[in-house]
Amino acid sequence: MSVIDIENLSFSYDRDIILRNINLHVEELDFLAIIGPNGGGKSTLLKLILGINKSKNGNIKVFGKTPAKNLSLIGYVPQNTNVNTDFPIKVIEVVLMGHVGAKNPLFGYGKDEIACAMGALSQVGMQEFSQSKIGSLSGGQRQRVMIARALCAHPKILILDEPTSSIDIKGQKEIYELLKLLNKSITIIVVSHDISVILEYANKAAHINKTLSYHDISDKKKTFHTHNEGEHFCEIELLQMLGSECNTCENDEATKRILWRETK
Amino acid sequence: MIEALQFEFIQHALIAGILVSFAAGIIGSLIVVNRMVFLAGGMAHASYGGIGMAVYFGFPIFLGASLFAMGAATLIAFLTLHKRHRMDTFIGLIWAVGMAIGVIFIDLTPGYNVDLMSYLFGSILAVSTEDLYFMATLLTIILFVITFWYRDILAVSYDSEYAKLRGVNVRFFYTLILILSALTVVIAIKVVGLILVIAMLTIPVYIAEKLSSSLLSMMLISGVIATLFTLTGLWFSYSYNLTSGASIILVSAISLGLFLLLHKTKGQI
Image (cartoon, rainbow over all chains, first blue to last red; front, side, top):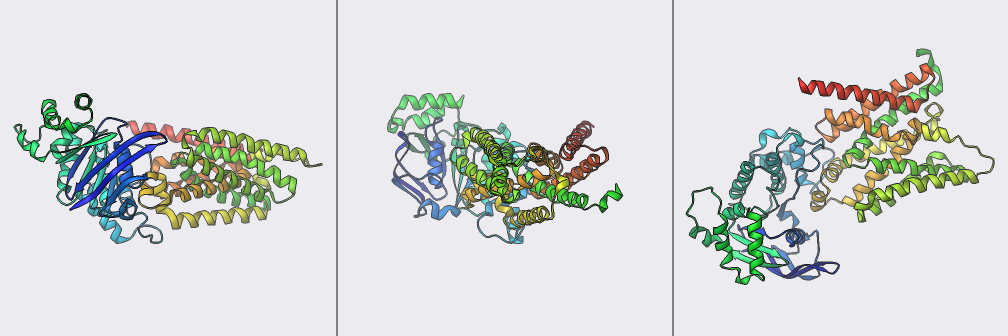
């Protein structure tokens, strides 16, 4: 069953075309990696899926409806979770924000909401930090809290924008292992620069640079699975994996250069 | 000091100090976490335009200043929601234009020589009963808003992008925070004056931020700290015949210095 259908989508700011003729179908329980250069339109595509930006050209359907109507089915983890760390707020309150807008009991939070938020925290292994101040956590821990916040509303799809950009290597691996676990019941879409890591976990990859080229890499991963569990793909493997299909890419050489640069 | 309490103007000053301190603690917390400190400063100065107009047209000063500051707040909200990156320019603009309007209107008022200093540096010893009612009403409104919309205000302040995604009306709450800030600034003018109001909105909050783990406790602690500073400042002002607004601010600043020193040495141990 496909959960997100994007057909002939184009988007432009003023006269700059950001996205041109995008077609993408995300199946249930996919782990889709969206990669591509900065300014290539990755974040714009996410904003379109989340209904923050609206396009006049083309169609986006989330479970068959417009994004705005099915927002509660999408959990979103924004980029830059390291901003505002001085803010006096407890971990549990951040997670409870996942409920905001649903229903509003007079002052404070309902018991069921707190239970739900604690459940989301234990899903990401952070329940013991529920009363800590958000600023006292490490980058990786804070990212887990943001994932818990997204899980709080029981989404069917989890979308993460650069989830590991400011986290150390160990923390990154933990985040991806967590996503792998969540992927058993939730469709996951990750925008990322860490190509070598993300492709280890993803089964589909979409490269966006104004246009989109799509790769099903689930078979290819098996072919290249010569290394030990948990190791990253090296650059050569990546290029072979994606490069062989890049005849669909508009500019093959440019893509390879980007891949090279980003995997360094 | 005790015998001073029998004077009505001293009683009024104390009550006004407490009311304004709590309003400043609560709203100051919102201003600080939303990084709106200079915005509040701009509104404080702009509200002088309202004071000038109130004097010229002959309606109550508080009313004029409140309406004008609310207008400025709405204008700032509109401008910053559309052009957030130019916020500093608009703040500077509203800051100066508001004051200029005030000065011109006072000039135009025939035979009225208003004491500009009392608005710039406060006149807590001249608080009337009506002023107290106005302050109490505003504090009630603030408490009401915080009680009913705490979650939404927290969400908008902490992560407005995410709040918007979850269906919170970010524009509404942003404007609401600004309007409440404008009104708080207006009542604080009476206590410390429009130039010093910024310190009253930030110093207690800065200390409270270090001591609290949630926005709610930050608001309450700020309110208590602000009250302490105001009452101590008033006592100095009364005992040594000093300007009350400036005394309150200096008491706050010295306390902040001591607090930071203590905080630092404690951290090193």
